[in-house]
Length: 352
Image (cartoon, rainbow, N blue to C red; front, top):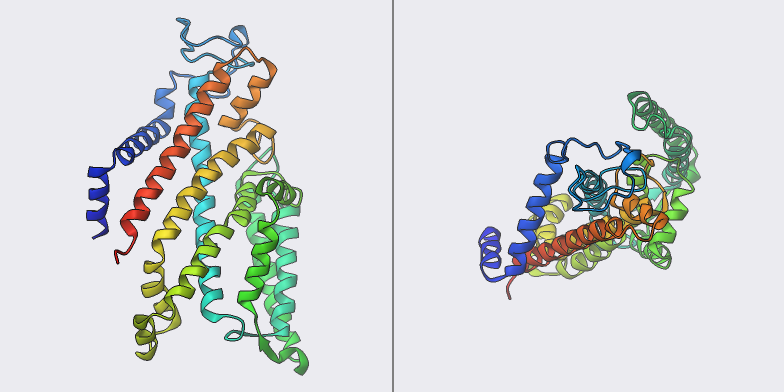
């Protein structure tokens, strides 16, 4: 059914066709970047050909930057970097936001209960995870994402989680702390969204970056922590609308579990706005990754990026190709992702 609707969108929407073809070509270019980069590595320095203009019958047919790095190779590898950051971040943000939004709308403020011992141990576990796993044991800029750093993080995660479980059981021996109270999940989520949404996203990312050590893994984490807000809002609104429909009440009366109702009945009916949120969030992340690279924040300086290319143009305003090529590629990619997102939204919408 959905596939047929997508075929109909393909037939009647020329923008959908152009966007799909463009992204497929870009995907092929990113996958075969080592073969298509004309033998140049994005960090290969050719100091004898700095600021080489494009189309000048040289081996660098799209020109070079201030260090003689090939522009074409950096476009290919920079696009790969952008998607390697944006796709996992938006996927994690979508899962996190959808889960929180649906849970908050379904359980409200009184249907979930927790003990004070659980709350105390969870807060301490959260703080310890941030400090020991993502700050103190962060990847160094010199050996980013090496096996030793990853193993160290996993060890800290296991140790802290074990200690949190032990602490929870010890605290539950105190009668006052073992008493269960309602968890205002919906209210907590709304207040948290209000606080995070009141701060501009770039300022929020820069603030979170100060709490984490440098490294690609931490960049993925802090971007995920700022992009779950949109999916959470949509998932909450759609769940509130769907949970009172007759077929949901029938599913509850038949004895289905909450997990089965949410996954099999609520989530498919809320898919259209969530897919749109994913695509628009993905396009926003592509731009934000370029912005962070332009500012020199998060990613290591040796990582090829469209933002790094744009930053190089500041040293020579006459090097127009360092602005034009990455800017046009970034704009076309964002426009294509948003166009495909709109097509999927129309295909997933339930016709009344």
